[in-house]
Amino acid sequence: QVQLVESGGGLVHPGGSLRLSCAASGSIFSINTMGWYRQAPGKQREFVALVTRRGFATYAESVKGRFTLSRDNAKNTAYLQMNSLKPEDTAIYYCNTVPQKSDYWGQGTQVTVSD
Image (cartoon, rainbow, N blue to C red; front, side, top):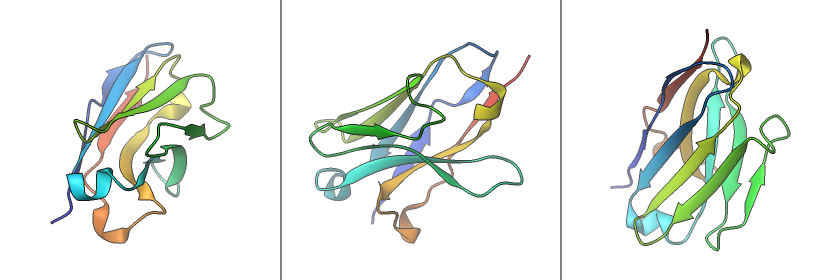
């Protein structure tokens, strides 16, 4: 059974940093482009970043220059390093494949940026 587990969220002040992790079943991680998505209260889920199997990353304009997405294929884990966090980054963050698979959505991890 495919499973994606997000972790690393928390409460941070504006300007702070967090590192999110996405641990995935090996069967999907090794062959797929992985992505991070987020959903803020009252808003639709949006794309944040993706990383190909070979490590090439692409970012949404809103996070470019502040977030860095990487992956460790040996550990079946993708990491989202988030720096210079802003209140508008507050959301539940999810990982999934790219394109998304409805069956792969996990619980997500809450990121709150606030004074």
